[in-house]
Length: 139
Length: 139
Image (tube, rainbow over all chains, first blue to last red; front, top):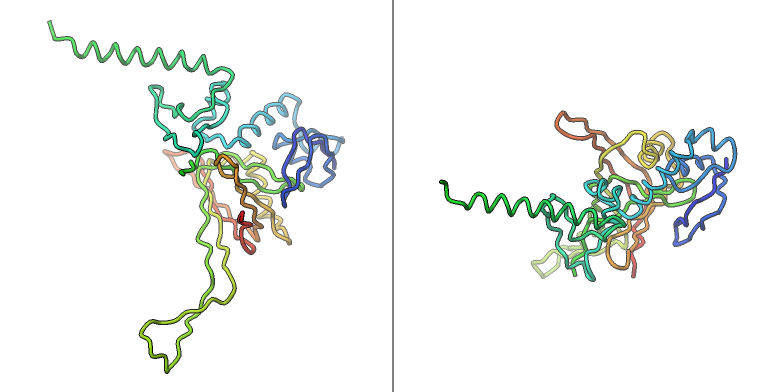
């Protein structure tokens, strides 16, 4: 059973299997399911049982796993708001909850970070307005 | 320098390549420990009990906990190891979220996996990888 790697993959003992390498192995279909390969023969295609769209989604999910995205940030990653973690050189940033309940101060901005920043601004403004309303003396 | 846990990745070998197991919540290596024996003798004039090393080290185990998804290929890889234990062990790796992306390679002699279902919680899995020998610690 054969599958073709769609990305460079590490092997034990610091070896690397380059993208494009054909893996001939009884478990090759699992690599397709994992999202790191596409089928290279009918046996693998049938065993993996995935449509091209499903394979594409699996590849996105694997990217998420490879980056070590924490489950609580899956939605943010999938939305393009974040692209991984940036704790700063030496990891000195402490994760802190923002107004939307996320630890966005340790996110590497994703392609749609601007969208998230706008949501965050809106939420912070709402909170400020609520605070201002609470401070107003009763008539 | 503090290294954050978020972004740490567990990888298990599937079809000769190391693939990331997603949705992990925690990983914990138990203490690896030099084996010692009590080396006291009857005419020892000192009160302190002497010990010697045997020259062997117990590698311990890696415990994990995660959100379990029964159809996720990475999680099926773990159940596959239960149904078909790998005679030569399974090559695994933990990649830390430090700036150097430090890798700890190890061979798992065996794995365990349990699943917890609770009314007020998501489906969770937890288990252990029994280390064959030691982690290949960076030197």
